[in-house]
Length: 377
Picture: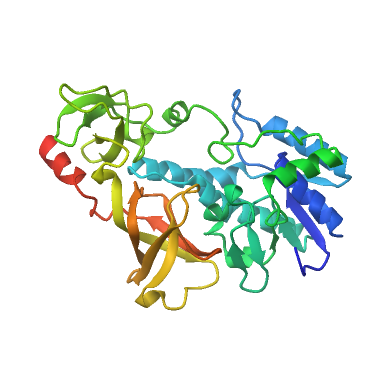
């Protein structure tokens, strides 16, 4: 927050400790702070935490002495995030709803609502750093373990220009300490996991309520049927758990992993060993590109950068080359495990997050396509 003049800031307050400490830091920096709690998912079952989260947010505001606003964005979430999530699953891809939620809800609907309430800026408890300005630049936080820039890479730059990330320069342990020392009631509340706003529930059970899926064969690399899957939307590339595949006569004892899925034939291909060649890729193609501070200079001719394929994936050295049609070719210095169509590849130049795009299924994956053709003919 260095160099940011005090003003009226509305914090997205989830009820968790991160956003609570973000509000505390803003107060100590001299800002006029209010909070806005979003209800983005309503579901009458034991997994929905909307009621308890709102209660926690109210207690935080009472502890800090700030005003709490409350708004329901459930319709916007279902229309702008969840509908696309289900569409991608039905198409055989593995979407990441947290990226879309940030772009459309947290830094879309929330920002617009906060501005209507008279905010100069908004703030959240994300772990990221911003170099402010008309074209803000996004950087990895001090706490690498909590780095959330992967989820923020598709946020519109105009939204980031009105945003503060108070936690970018402190670590999670310090956040807990600040909350405890101040006496915030939620200082020991555990971090939430699971799908953004849907909560921590059995994933397959949840999907079955929204996606119809037919069982089908599980095939080995040689085309042998070794089991039956419950429905392709319930699986992702590289998955190990929940396959229900045992050993084969005369085969290896190594665990099985999902190498491919073919929605047209409703078949799942599995291989043994975490480093099986069919799980590794040197090159991927991405589309629907979004750049945080404009298209990087020189990328049309290729740039040496680092790329991240998932949230906890350490950015890997690569060459990124812009292709016609708003597409990107990414060639890694070393093979990367299970780049997954529908997920995102995010590019970094040092600590700066440049943007990224959606990983495409370009047909270049070795092995599984020929097995599927032979085994399901």
